Length: 145
Image (cartoon, rainbow, N blue to C red; front, side):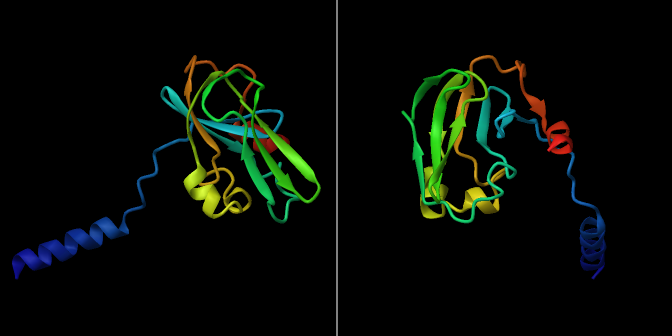
């Protein structure tokens, strides 16, 4: 009975604690409204919510020359909607190592509902992991749009 009481008290204590959310995202944006989230020598890239704000439904998502080395500014994907197209550019130099085709082929509208998390487009291995030149910290980006 004592073990059970201690276990219940400990469980109650843990449940009453605030979630441990000390992880700060290393997230930046470009002037073209792409975002990049750094994870050591790798990064995820996508399009900001602001850039897709007027889009109601995505008609087609296509990746341009999917794998290999890409330089900053190169187009990596095109998002088609209505009669328009949004080009997604590389915010830094790096090798594309993965595309988010599993999630996005099933539900392309993840780009609209969760563009800055689950709606990421590509994962890259960064050429120069410490370089943030030309990128805008996410908090600063949000305050200027």
